[in-house]
Image (cartoon, rainbow, N blue to C red; front, top):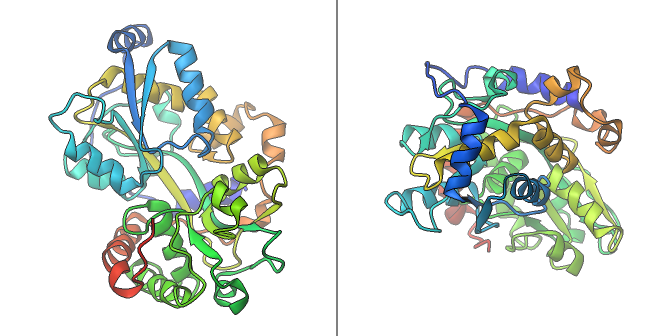
Amino acid sequence: MKNVLSRTLSISILALCASTGAAFSQSMDKLVADAKAEGQLTVIALPHDWCNYGEMLSTFKAKYGIQINELNPDAGSGDEVEAIKANKGNKGPQAPDVIDVGLSFGPTAKSEGLLQPYKVSTWETIPTEAKDADGHWYGDYYGVLAFQVNKDLVKNVPKDWADLLKPEYANAVALAGDPRTSNQAIQAVYAAGLSTAPAGGAAAGKAGLEFFKKLNAGNFVPVIGKAASIAQGSTPIVIRWDYNALADRDKLAGNPPTEVVVPKTGVVAGVYVQGISAYAPHPNAAKLWMEHLYSDEGQLLWLKGYCHPIRFNDLAAKGKIPKELLDKLPPAEAYKAAVFPTLDQQNASKAVIAGEWDKIVGANVK
């Protein structure tokens, strides 16, 4: 899997960054002291079962003794950016210090002056094509869209997007977010469209909306799917990032049994990115959080949650990835068809999907 995804990443999102800049990491001793003086970090949209963020948060608190204020764990990427905008002059608990958003949201937030630059001490090991040259945003992890299926309720597990339209999946298929604001849901709609519009971009976005219009005729459930809804049976099939589905499979431990399927076509891989708010109330704690995320320890914590960390190749080359983590990853064959949409393709499709979901699909996902 690492070779397939890393190679595709290098090919597909080249030339995302341009320009020059500084903002290199400062002395760690001083940074730790300054962050502790601030005493708090405010994060947003970090569910504990997403990419092993629960352990990522707890290890940060234990290591540095800094309290973490967690805002709206179920927010989407668009909500995170809006939270920065809404709290520009607010130094209170509702103002996020950091965000973790889909790739296309990083450059947009930078262009709107919402992010401040910072380059972690491991900056040089982050692939050039996955970071802003000035340090305003930088890739953190990636995965592919997959189907998570409750096998107690779904006897014939769907293998591809077209299967989801079959009558046997009536009132069974859900997204893991609202496609008007959630990057995960937007990319899921894009993936569905890519299976019939392989050129990508706005055409795939439009095709995805038409697919979900058909799905909404009887098979789509307008509920944000998660482990609990899968187990309860209200959303027997959820379209989500493979790392979330695999982590849920482990958490459910066979009750009910779930299967994670990478579709045969329309295999979309997505990069998420980190950034520090330009208005962060705790800027030093935010920088220390980034140092934690991009350290060897932090990268392996993401991998433990089935997310391929952006420094995967660097860690692998240095022999720092435990065999037991590698053995738990899905086989590489399932990912051979994976494509990373370019930034232009993501922007074009996001505009279509988020902008026309209500008009074409008409399902209020919540």
